Length: 92
Image (cartoon, rainbow, N blue to C red; front, side):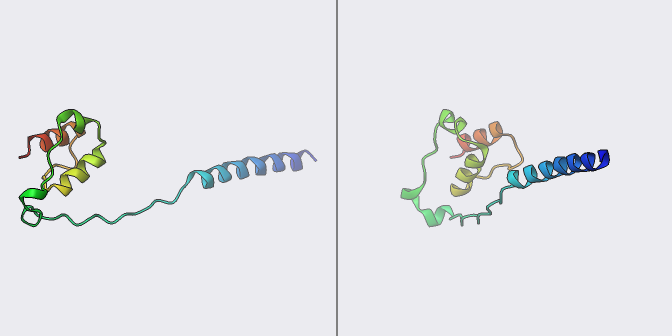
């Protein structure tokens, strides 16, 4: 009788652990990168103005990298956020 109770408690613990793992794992969306146009394709009138350093610091690193891609600014992706901000701010 005692073994049955221990087995039931053990099964309940295992079930609780596995049911939590299923709830936490959400599917990951994969997005395709957008095509980056060259400066010649953009033309002089469509070039984006470079935001100020304070505006750049408010963005996340992912947003900064997207901004750099859209504006054909070469940045080191493995660099820190501060390095990416500095590269975008110093770009002309």
